[in-house]
Picture 1 (cartoon, rainbow, N blue to C red):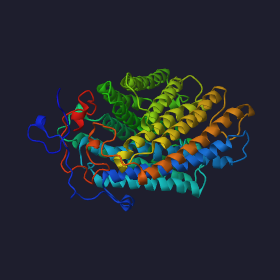
Picture 2: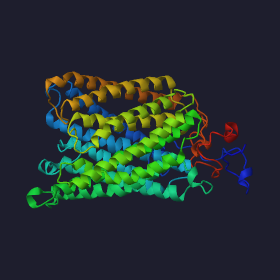
Picture 3: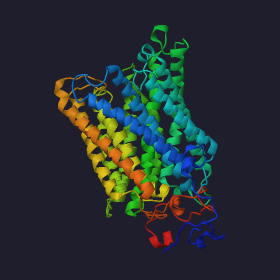
Picture 4: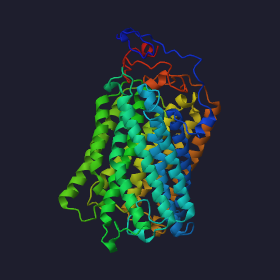
Length: 552
């Protein structure tokens, strides 16, 4: 049997490399708590900064969601003023997508893990990396300031002419916050592309790059293609509101459909900006926790790149009521179905990897399997959404589908990633008993909140409403109960994370017996990751070899 391992001080012949990583006590100590509140250029610090601030924004957006669901527990408007309801809706969606899911997956996990996984000491542009984080934080504060300053009524799509008619200072602040968030994403994406392409350790071949890095690479390329277009549209809208231009003013020969094109050219691909890193997380977790090679490395890598290409041609699906030629409607009906094929490839590969192995139902695997279920549910309902003439696009069926994909998919994936890499980040294990309870509450709460929405939509209940027909009360009350269960689950998770970080069981350097490079350094890693850069002599998922030899 071929003996393969990682080594950090090899002789010239890599096949005879020593079998142990050596760390010297003389190396600088890990970062202190106060360092996480400074302009720090270490990728690990920035990753944790993204994760913690993202979770705080998640709590804020979650409180907004509970307020919205409390209002919808009754058929009348008796809890929130309709204008406040619109403002909460706008900011809930924006914070969840831009400041929680996107920034936690790309900014948080991406920054922390990518250099460790490819054998680099830091990102290619450390200062640019820190600037991107602080821009994102300023963007979040501006968004919250816009909510406190005044109510913003145009929803998160900001469609003109509504956004022009209701324009106020709050809306301008909201637009500025999104522009800053877009700039932050562009800086992050440039950094990731250069880091992955140029800074992987020389001994790492392209088919030895962890699949999470492929996911971040594809996500970054897609972000570089789509986010500048959104920035252009928002800049023009900002000028229309504040400087008397008429790019989108219909009474001054402006074109409101152009804004929809500019907006959705980003807004639909942003679904994949959120979910592609989660796919990468799943591709790391599943083979590690069943100790089995990924069923098809190339299928996962190539399907990621295929999604990036196909996702650039789906935006017209959202503006189907505009004057779109029939041949174009057919094209934009087919392109999302092509994306669905690539998604099915990934799910099949993960299921095939799980097949025939004894699964340990740890918190990590519970959330990973929960992700597969939730995303499959969302994908099935999405097949209906992709059929342009099928008229459910302004009903609660859309809300249910959207949340199964983005909450059920992304949030379950984020939780799985946190439980998996928490030992690496802190050196301690999350409490398993609390983790299982957290999963049960999250799973029940998610399905209880969003599954009834499909029936509400098929029965004709419109979305974005405060008052509705009394026939929908029972299902809406079920949704509200589910929302409160989700709120309880988040509190339990936060307590588990804080307690485990302080007093959790010591994890050791590699508690999961993983073969990817981030587990070959200490937990938590030293400041520059390794004393001497590692040499890669086997693939990240080569669990078919003698496992003791690989880890020795």
